[in-house]
Image (cartoon, rainbow, N blue to C red; front, side, top):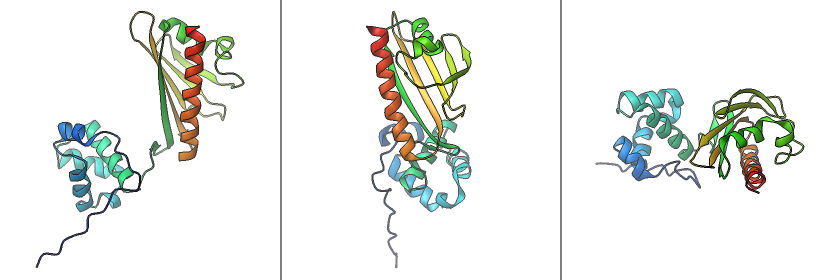
Length: 192
């Protein structure tokens, strides 16, 4: 007699980080298959590193994709919240701005220019590669912000902010909204 095993449903409200079709193209299996396989392999008990290694070694999943499938599995099973990393939560925000990369970089680097779109926030730039990247210390003293500047054609620059070491999912949501609004302000400032 075969006893049917009850499938464990994804965590309530889980949205896969990447579509099942895209995952299948890159890994050979979609989300439902990976969730079932990782449940059988007891991935929920072995941890992130062991699960990613299992995917890579036993199932031949390429390195980045083994990490992504592991994170998706952890989120689906309620083991990890959206934006959660081992050292806290991390969010990203990005905008394409109608200005050359030199102007966008300057608007971040120079305190007077920065005050026009990021008022009353005393951040510290502690490392930068002109017109490419910047590392920023947040107001709480953590070196938790990376900013990337990408030339997107004549008079266009994409600016991407990664803010990590956030303490909770609520803080991550708040900072995602904050950086979205601040990048919109930067866009308005430079495009006016």
